[in-house]
Image 1 (cartoon, rainbow, N blue to C red):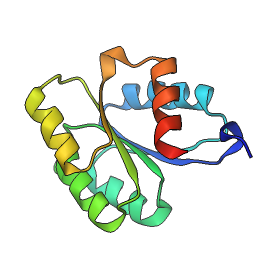
Image 2 (image 1 turned 90 degrees about the vertical axis):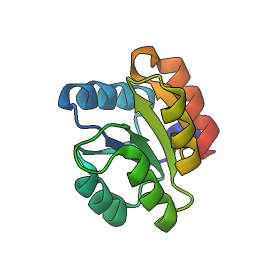
Image 3 (image 1 turned 135 degrees about the horizontal axis):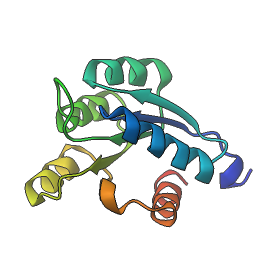
Image 4 (image 1 turned 45 degrees about the vertical axis):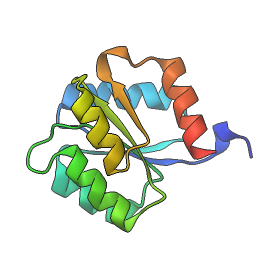
Length: 127
């Protein structure tokens, strides 16, 4: 089975509904066999991680309630093999450092996401 046929459970944790929808469409175009779930805030994200056990999580840093860094620590404690990619509009060295320290695999800026970058990153993390 090649990568393109591999079913990959993915969770997008993002409070902005329009970005979540557009990003989901982008992922579906790149990875037709990817199963994509969504969460708008931390409690919903934790419930979905516990229930669905995604292999990959795209995590916003700023969320209502618990922020993405705190959520990442919780997820990595219970699911250490889950890959977490931070997607944010904030290009802060402090955020970047904390995101990686919390267990994030990568830190991407929303405004610079493109199909090629996403495809290469996902393939490199989950092969």
